Image (cartoon, rainbow over all chains, first blue to last red; front, side):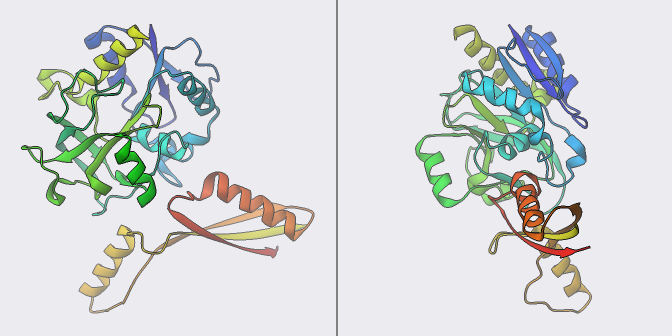
Length: 231
Length: 82
């Protein structure tokens, strides 16, 4: 099994994701430059964080129109798991692989801090190793993480349980005070309708070893690997 | 023919504009009251096409494919001969 780590000019969490996959989870991963057009040899893909193309125009917009995204769409259609972290989440919404859009934080400031997340569904390739309702600690680092979707889309997403994580307090309560960016319904991570594509603003690769202060993020990568092994 | 398109992109009405809100607040600190302040972004695009209609069609495609995000934005195109 090899997982692709998709890289653009300006990606900067690529090596962290590579380290977690290879050295912590213990699977093969390969960095793939955006000019490549064939991802068929990979069992899944991760689009890491960073500032692709300087976040010019809109975060993720330019990266989402590069040829490799067509290949990401192809393997997503085949049911392979795709995870977009932070800028990767922005790229996935901009490319139409995920619902909604990520707008500038309600208070327009770069937020880099630990957040508590509530696991909203374990029915996905990325969250099967968690318990539903569990509160985990994963840090964020973003300026444009304010998730927006229109009412009809949001309601469908709630009905189909497509929200994976919400920002909560330590007790697991959804409040405005712990919403770091103004996201609707405190949404931090979502799935596509087929549940094999997930985008999230928090950085699980920065919380994948206890020396970093939390290893809660590790289980997302482990869930993904287990899903691939069982496909 | 040479054409110049001025494309204006703005957030749909009612959507929160954090940049506009911050500028409005800063103006209030300076003693200026505004009822509302919203930001927009303008792109100036020079292109060569056979007709104004063709040029407008091309720029509209550019807006739909990349420059605007239809989920959150409205846009207008002002086209003139350059």
